Length: 250
Image (tube, rainbow, N blue to C red):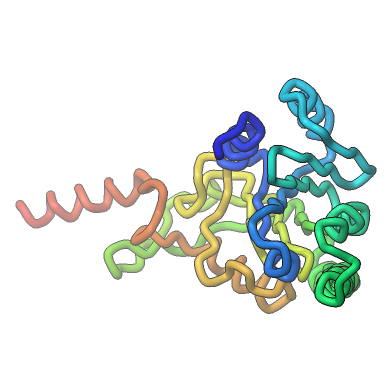
């Protein structure tokens, strides 16, 4: 059902305001009646203003918001530790007077505890390798990388990039789920494989465990423009094609 809250979250997700999260170790016990999103805590006031405008029941915690909209429970997390704050609400959805309800409730708690314990462990190697790093429970951000693209692949042909500094990437923000797997990457400059907001197309890296190996793969993927599947074509490719066409016509 397309309620005002659902429309607000969907539109904001498209515009890069929220990241929709799939937490299978929770949803497999409770189905589609709970929706998870993550966003930055700086957006909390705007979210609360909209919730109040929609006249919805909600509970606000330091690291999370839980909102009831009809039969759906929406959970917005500002940090992964917020899962502990909303755990009692999730557990109340089960019949804790039955063996099955108690079992599911305990399984969710166990999975949340385990995921929070492991969520940032794999970041340590990346932190040691790079100087300018900011880490939160749900993301790792690298500054002043000075990452220049090396090549572009177009129609199975490798093309040199004439002015790589035009496309230099300084900041990369990698978002992870509670298990430490990559769910989204945002770049601070134009890239053919990122949309106009900087959200990078992950391909096979989606849901890969974030560690030094997968991060190196991500950097290599960013350094090579894949123009066989991209959002836009750089001008130098079009100019190269026009030059080749002119040469054939001489």
